[in-house]
Image 1 (cartoon, one colour):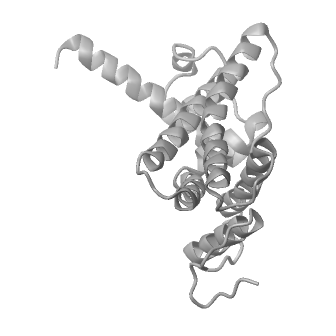
Image 2: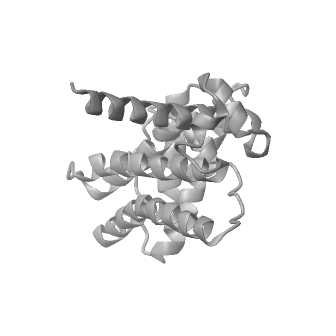
Image 3: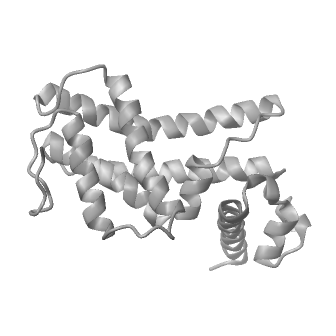
Length: 218
């Protein structure tokens, strides 16, 4: 590897270290309590180093959110290419969303649990819209899966956008609780998630066989 390639790799690695450190700090202390100095201390660099990569804290948050939505979209796409039956694919996508939050708890909190920073300039507005576009790309996977299930007759036909938004709200509920309330005495995580998914699909009008053999769906 040449000098140019090595420097490019090192620059990319430091960029990722900044984002990971910032994600952890935002999740631990909240957005308002974290400064660029704190982020620099976490990665053991001078604060001036941060400015070589990001103009301010808001740009770091924007980068984190964009990166996370891309990761989520990739996870959903890996399911969509498997050509599963519509209801099975929908369940797998919902499960993948929850698993994404469990695999990347700090990222999930920053992207979907913290209040959005108020835009202070036209550039901030542009960046927020850019993140929204990437986030909507992931959301549209859910809407498409629901539409496919409606067309296949395996869930109740309804307003697709309304159904997609309320379904996302439900899935976000269990994901955010599992991520942020680790001290609560939750039951076995997998059993809890599968039971919850049964309830979500049941609310959509699906005729399902419970994943838990001891469970009775009423």
